[in-house]
Each structure stands twice: as C-alpha cells, then as structure tokens.
Image 1 (cartoon, rainbow, N blue to C red):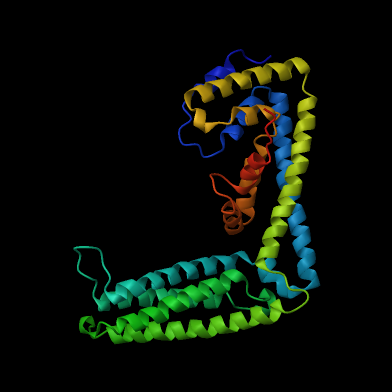
Image 2: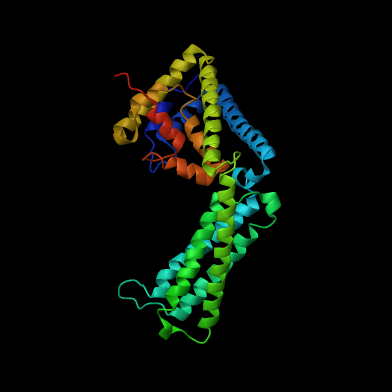
Length: 328
C-alpha cells in the first residue's frame, strides 16, 4: 500500500537550490514509495553504468590494439593526466604573472615589485616544466600526446616567456636575486617551448595518418555509448513499471501528481508539470544519472558537452527536456 498524502507532504518541503533537476528528485521520491519497484530501478541503474563502462573499455581497447599511438588520446594514464592538470594550473599562474610583472594592480593599491613577481612566476614555471615534462616520460608506452598536453604546454610557455619579457619593463624594482629568478623563468619557458614544438609536430604527423583518432572522436564515442546504454535503461525502467500492479501504479501516480501540484503552486518556474507527468516513474531520473556517469568517465568532456546548449544541468538532462513534445 502507498501511504496516503505522502506526495503532498513531499511537494510541500522547501526545494531550495536544486543540485539535481526537479524531475529526478520527484522520480526518486515516487520510486521509493514502492520498495519492490525501487529495487528494480536501482538494479537497472547499476546495470546501465556497468554496461556503459564495459562497452567503453572494450571499444577503446580494440582501438588501441589496432594503433598503439592512440593510447594517450583514448585512455591516458591517470598519473599523466594528474601531472598535466598540475602543469596547466601552474602555467595559468605564470600566465596571470604577466600582468603582475607589468605592474598591473587593483585600484588604490600599489603594484607588486618585480622582485616579488619574479619569485612567484619562477616557482610556477618550474612546477609547470617539471609536471608537463614528467607527463611525457616513456613515450613508447604513451603514444602521441593528447590535446590536453599541447594546451597545457601552450599556456605555460606563453605565461613563462611573457612574464620574462614583462619583468624587463620594470628594472627599477629588481633586487639582487631577481636576475636568478628571471633566468629560471626564461629557461623554463624556452624548455617548454621546445617540448611544445615536439608535441605539436608529433600530433601533426599523427593527424595525417589514416588511423588517426582525435580527442573529439573519443568524446563523441563516449557520448554515443552512454546514449545507447541510457536508451536501453529507459526501456527497462518502462517495462519494470508496467509490471507493477495496476492499483499500485495508480496510487503512485496520484501521489506524484499531488507532489507536482504542490511544487507548481509554490514555485511554478521550477517545474514543467506537463513534462514530468508524461514520464513513467523510474525513467525520469535516468538522464541525470547519465550526466553523473559522464562526469565520472571524463569530467572535461562532460563539461564541454554540457556547454553545447544553454541552461542548467548536463547534456543528457537537456537532451531529455528538448526531446519532450507537448500534445496540448
């Protein structure tokens, strides 16, 4: 039996700043009102994630086996990715150091001396060089460096060499150690410029081969695999819902409608009631689960996909909402 009034009480709770789309929150509540169905939905979600990961792993393994040069683009080693993230952050610090080295400051605040800027940029440049250089170790096992490597090296190189030139515009604020830091910055910048040229050359040669795979290709493959798994999970959830006893289905839908009405009365801009009612319980939360899985599999690719369309939440939630067709 479904407790009478549970939907209205749920809908009257403050929603606040929702981290999940409202249809997923309502769906999670509706599913929980009938534990046997909740267990089926949980199993469907677990299978959805497992199958998407398994297909991605088997597909990428086959891609690498056919051309080992694809490895860093398809499945970069986690330690390489970590070093590149650190290198990018250090490079971004050096890039910001250009303004500091030029003496740019906030209104009513004196500029930072070039001697201080040189220390900050020098440390950032060395960290960037060490991290990005280390990420290129054992190239035979790495394959062709991926897009993130060239971007990180580009940012760090511009930051280091730009800061070195900017420091030359303020010799009056140098001290006796600044020349050492300046040489360190310039040397790091030149070393990273050499690495950048090598990486870009390798990527250019690889791009001209018939077996070349780009980061965009891998991103699209990941999206396609998750989409197929999501569609299969949605069908499974609909079938599971059809097996719930008719009286129980009607009771759950009635309580869910009460929850939707309560939310719509309190915050009408928050919810598209027609859309939420049109989706069978168990399926409405799957697009949000797909976005979470996408972020776990590749955060950067998920963020790029999310920005394709304006609006809040992720690619799959936007896709589901855009695919809803009104009949009224």
